[in-house]
Figure 1 (cartoon, rainbow, N blue to C red):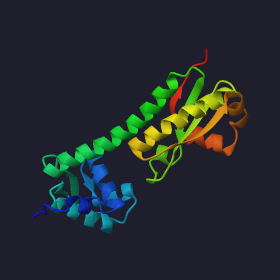
Figure 2: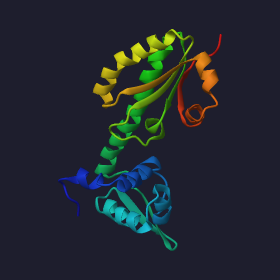
Figure 3: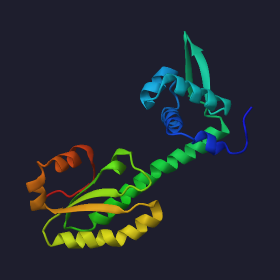
Figure 4: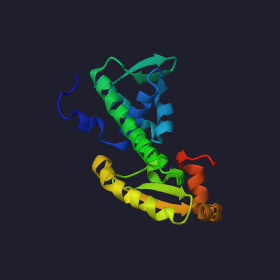
Amino acid sequence: MMRFHDILEDIFSSKVKISVVKILFRYPEKKFSGRELARVVNASPSRVWEILNFLQRYGIIESARIGNTIAWNLNKSSIFSKELKRVFHLEKKMFGDLKHKIAHLFKKRLFVKRVILFGSVAHGKESPESDIDLLVVVKKENDKKIAGDIIQQLNPVFLSLYGNMISEIIYSEKEWLAKRNTPLAKNIESKGEILFERESA
């Protein structure tokens, strides 16, 4: 039997539990063994086994024996599964919405050549207090102040919507070319996400 109160506190009570649930929702047709899930979420098999049994008690997942292995998969008919799907969809939509807003803002400014999201938000490892790290490359030196002013005007909106502010690095094209071999620039280029890039005329 399942409980009808304080359910979310139970389901979202640990990062490992959330990671397991997310994987099961990401691959709703796949059957996972406990050890396979443990490897994916980087947790001990015993901890994942405990979580899977917990989720099954709520009817969120189902299990079946395949040979010598117990396989687990999402129970798509569960009322919890249907509602949790909305939650995870919202999370994904919020990140997409954030990227779209930033790209749309700078696309309209012809002096902006490139915008890259980097740091913890780009890598999905942010905390609630994390800034939204942006690299903005502009055409000329005197365009840097204009880009900075635009971001400062946008920050109150982002703080209200997401609870986070933009922390920007702004370079002219000339500066960026000079700095591209620095460790920071290499890290941004290799691990960041390009939100907007204007083709050279």
